[in-house]
Length: 177
Image 1: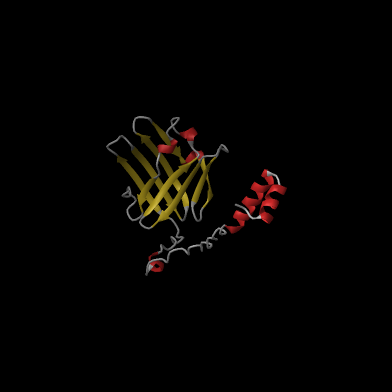
Image 2: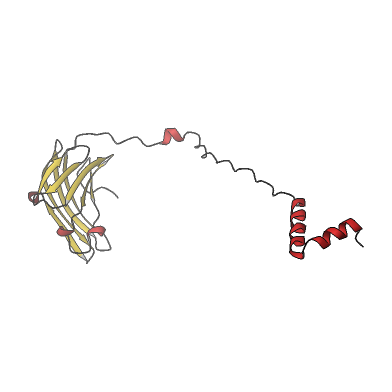
């Protein structure tokens, strides 16, 4: 049974206030939530020993001289026939036709282009002011000829499948892929 002072206190407050008081008192007894320590950001992993020595060096910017003729066929029907002659970074001759399986072809002739750049990549743009560009660059052991934005010179829908052609820089033939 409750003692007289507590009994009088309980009778003096209504039930809702009593329950609120109990909740507040019991809530004050609860332990505060434990703060989780902040997670430190992890440092990026250290590169393996010798990684700095394995980084590739930039391709040296050298003059391109090439007498190239690449004619090859793949088992899946892809083939190309390309002639590219360059002297002192100036394109002298260019004829390139490629077949994307049995889906269609792309065709490029130097007479339809004008050279607009020699370094670091040789660039040729169409004479008609279109977006089509031919790009030529040299890598160790090969010279690559590629096209960009040239859908008008290809059978519709095949431009993305029409890959560049690479010439062996020592003998002008097709470069191994």
